[in-house]
Image (cartoon, rainbow, N blue to C red):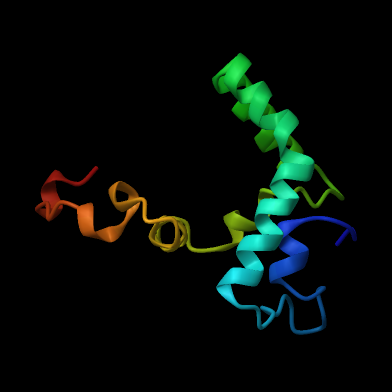
Length: 111
């Protein structure tokens, strides 16, 4: 992994023989590093997404997955997706994104 400001470096140890190992960080430490990192490196991409809509998001995805790059927003892809977003939403008290607002749908209705 590339050194410097990135969320992945705050959450994960460098790859070892056994693969990635999660660091022992408090939620506050992770949150502080993540916010600082995104503010530092992500503002340009956020503006691009606002101006270019889906094309800005597509460009961000390309940067995140470029070979040899460790981009600040990439690490959230290593989590289990929706549960990670539920956790972050809970931290920020964004109830509409938390598990509490999930509808109980029959399996045949789920796409």
